[in-house]
Amino acid sequence: MSAFLTIEGLNVSLSGVLPILRSVDLAVHAGEVRGLVGESGAGKSMIGKAILGTLPRALRIESGRILLDGEDLQRMRPRDRRRLIGAKAALIPQDPLTALNPARRIGPQITDRLVDILGWRRRAALSRALELLDEVRITDPERVMRAYPHELSGGMRQRILIASAFAAEPRLIVADEPTTALDVTVQKQILRLIRDMQARHGTALLFVTHDLGVVSKICQTLTVLYGGLVLEDTTIEEFFAAPGHPYSAALLGATPKYTDPHGSLTPVPQSVIDAANAQLDAFDRARRQ
Amino acid sequence: MADARTFVSRRAGLRLWLSGGWLVLLTLAAVLAPFVSPQDPLAQDLFAARLPPFWQAGAEAGFPLGSDSLGRDVLSRIIYGARVALIVAVIAGTLTCLIGATLGLVAGYFGGWPDLVISRLVDIWMAFPPVLFAILLIAVLGTGLSSIIIAIVVIDWTRFARVVRAEAMRQAAMDYVASAQVAGRSRAGTMLREILPNVLPTILVLLTLEMGIAVIVEAILSFVNLSISTDQPTWGGMIAEGRLSIYQAWWVLVFPLVALFLTVLSFSQLGEGLKDRFDPVLR
Image (cartoon, rainbow over all chains, first blue to last red; front, side, top):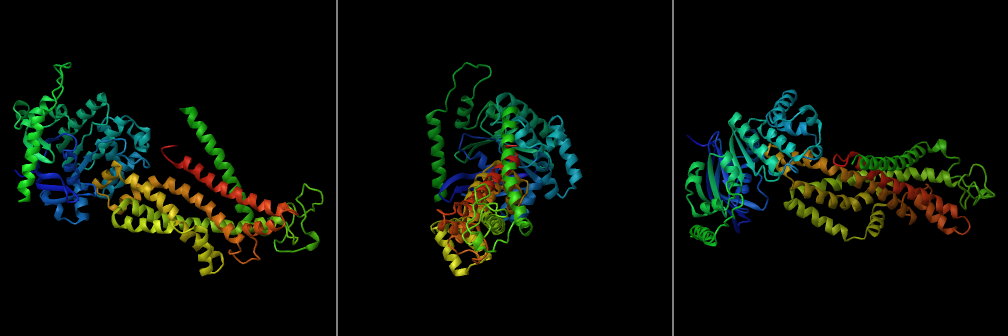
C-alpha cells in the first residue's frame, strides 16, 4: 500500500550553507500516527513546515520530493499546492496563544477554510463549526464562536485549534508539539482529545514532539531525528523494547520514569553524542563527493 | 479587574468626547462659515482696527475675539481658516495613510526585494529635512491647496511606511499567519484579511496624528506665505500677521494659535481614544 505522505531524500538548508534536514525519508500511511522526535534543533518542526509549505524564508529545499496523496508538492503551481494542502492537510500548532488571529472572532477563523477553499455554503460551515466545537467538548459553542481569542483560556484555544484542524476532514494532520505550551494538567486532556479525535476521524497524524512519554501514549510508529538526519524509523513496540540506535537508547534512558519518580536522570552520554555527530560528518562528506 | 476596565473606558470616553466634540464643532463652523461668522472675513474697516476681545474695555459687538490691524474680524477669519485646515487635514491625511500604510504592509509582510526597495526609499526620504523639502516642493508645484496636499503626502508617507512595516513584520511571525497559510489562504489574502485587521488600530492612530501634522504643516507653509492665495484667511497666515503687532494686539496672534493647538491635540487624542475603543485586545 502506498503511503498518504511520502518524503524522499529531503534536503533543506539555511541559504545553501548550513544543512537543516539531511536526506530525510519519511512515510505516513492513511490513518497512521507517527511520532517525530528529536532534541531542540533536530529539525523535527522543519519537516512539518516543509510539508505544509510554511518554511521560514531563509530555508530552502535543496533536493528531494514531498508527495502528498501521490502529488509532488514541489512540482505544483503555488496556487494548486495551497489548495491541495488546504483541503487534505492541516496543522495543530504549538502555541495556542498566537495561533488564533487576535483581531478576529473565533467563528470565522474556523469557517474560513471551509468557505474560501472548499467552497462550502456559509450556513453549512457554521453548523459544522458548532458541531466540531461540541465534539472537542466546548460548552456553549455559540458564545465561543462570537468571542475573541483573548477572552478564552489557553486550553480552550487549543481545543478550538484542534476542532479547526479537523474541520475540513483532512487526511493528514501535522501536530507541532501541541501540548508544549500548556500546563501539565491541561496537557493530558488535550493529548487524550487529539487521540480520540484521530481515532474517530481516522486521520493520519504526524506528531512532532520531544516527549517520549507522549509518544508512547499516542503513536504507532516513530522517527528519531538527530541534526536533521533520520537515525531510526521503527514501531513503538520495537522502539521501547529494543531501540535500534545508541542515541535512541540514550534518549530513552534520559526520560523520567513514572515508576521511579525520585530516581536521577541519565543525560545522553557524550560518547553517544560524539558518535551521532560523527555520523552527521560522514553523511556530509559522502554528499560532497 | 472590572474597576480597572471601567476606569480605562471612562477615561478613554472622556478623551473621545472632548476631542471629538472640538472637531465636530470646528467642522460645523467651517461648513456653515457664511452663516455663523459674525463678519465677512475679508472686509477691512480701518475705523475698527485692533479692537480687543469682548471682555476688555473698548470691545465692540460683532467682533467677539477682536479685530486685526486692518479691522478684520478675528473670529470670522479663524472660522474660514478652519476650512482650509480641515480640508488639508482630511485629504492629505487620508492619502498619506493609504500610500504609506500600503507600502509598509507590503514591505513588512512580503519581505525580500519589495522590502529592500521600500526600506531604502524610506531611508533616503528621511534624510531630507521635511520643512525645507516642503518649501522646495511648493516652489516647484506652485502655491495652492492641491500643492500643499501633494507636498504633505510626498513628505509624510514614510511615517506610515516605517511603523506599519515594523508592525506587519511582528504580526507575520505569529503562528496564526502560518495557520492561515496552511488553510489555503493566498499571500495577498493573508496580508489583507489576517495581518491588516491587527495593524488597523495602529494605522488609525497614525492617521489621526497625521491629520494633526497636516494642519501644522499647512500652518507652517502659510506662515511663510507659501500656502494658498494670500487673501484667503489661514491660521498660519493669521499667526504671521499677528506676530507683527503682538505688542499692540496680542489677540490676533493668540486666538488662531489656540485654535491650531486645540485642533492638533484633538486629532491625536481622538486617535488614542478610538484605538482604546476598537482594539479587541484592550476592549
